[in-house]
Length: 302
Ligand SMILES: [Zn+2]
Image 1 (cartoon, rainbow, N blue to C red):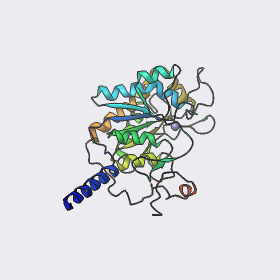
Image 2 (tube, rainbow, N blue to C red; image 1 turned 180 degrees about the vertical axis):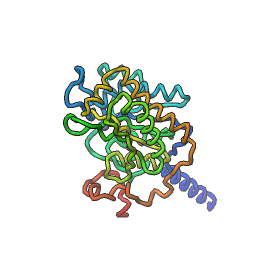
Image 3 (tube, rainbow, N blue to C red; image 1 turned 180 degrees about the horizontal axis):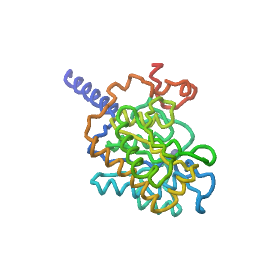
Image 4 (spheres, rainbow, N blue to C red; image 1 turned 120 degrees about the vertical axis):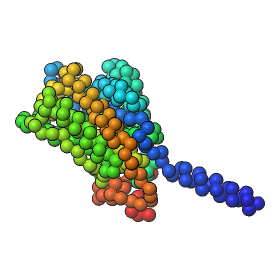
């Protein structure tokens, strides 16, 4: 009888352990490319048409992610492309989605934040994409966006950025920035000689931090590409021309390959104690204390 009880206890212990230890990224996992935003809420848009076209983040990446993907696959790495929303039903988006083999996660934007399935104190809108990268044990995750300020930029360059997670992301982000700086920015895409910079984000209320912290917990380098500005006419002209647009998308792919080749096998940081809160945990910032997020865990109060 005691043996049976012991067996039951051991089973529960093993079950408990496996349910709270999330999958981990390794160098051998696939690269996850996430097309930001979703059908119905496509992100930043150019203020007016350039060459008859108004660019929007979502549509642009649906069209060009294929080239990013191809560069990485041609270098010998596996790639998964995802988008948090529903599958587009009309062309050309539907055709582009098919060509790039986009995996749709069926979780369109609601404007609300929600917790990660793996780390209940990591909260963000669109965290479903980070959870996807974690579930696939990604080697890295790159979130594809463009940026925008208000109105048309009249002079000088824009504040091109690669945003990344704190522990695992800086090398990946630097490789992306270096590649864009040597192949695109001020090399065909004018930016007033301003270079793309790397910015680490890890505080829970900072946009994109919540989902990238979840990746960080699982040892997955994560970066958001915010290098092109859709209110910068020079950037929009570059992204509107099919051959230079393709060059931009391929440069992102080459940045990722550069990271995998030079640093993909470096030791990764994994969050060992998920009961210990940090600045990236829900409830740290005043902003996140003001909102209620169903299902989220506030480790500061427990
Ligand atoms: Zn965006």
